[in-house]
Length: 295
View 1 (cartoon, rainbow, N blue to C red):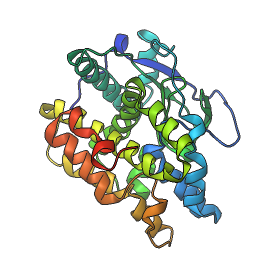
View 2: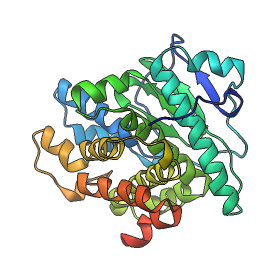
View 3: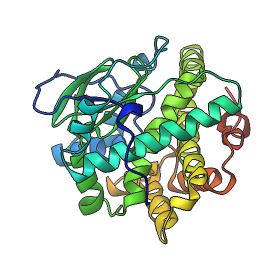
């Protein structure tokens, strides 16, 4: 994907690389999104059941409403220095800048208030408003501080271990987590948390709908920037969506896929909803809750 260089005055960046950070069981917000991959891989390596680990990490305690206003972080020259450390950082900031511009326009068109998230770089471990950040979690969104957390080593894992390569696959990482930010701003995350508390037995189903909507929102962003896409980008994104389907992860873990245990959706579902966003470019077509049975 050929994105413009990021606007340093329109990105909020926090850089925790080399800064230590918290430890312990992380409480991740807004759905784990693509971070499910590294969590599962780490569980396999340690001999644990990866789906048990995923269920623990995806608990409702972290999906909390964020305070009003933009997340506090650096912008301008300070942001530019963090964004230019390496190519992975630059690509991530370019995607963030594009996402800010796209969703600001979409919110304005809908008469809704918009606030930018922050992108937090960390290495191995860090800290977030939702608890500790660890590389094994992969990228995630924390609604408490409106932060998208990323260890850029995840991109190498995607390429070398998961077979999800290409620049658009990497952009999809940021766009999916940004989709959780959109849900947070629109109050969807808070509604899902309330529904989970009221009906714990349906928590997995609600989680699937939340994740698939974030996939669709990622596709909407791509559609609004279709002139930036290159040959093979759509295939790269759909392949990444396939690789993170719950059924694919379960098969890779040596388990028989069990739909009742899905928390992010099957490979077919994730591809379907990403494609829906890419083909329509309409956030209104991303209402997974209405189409999949509601809350």
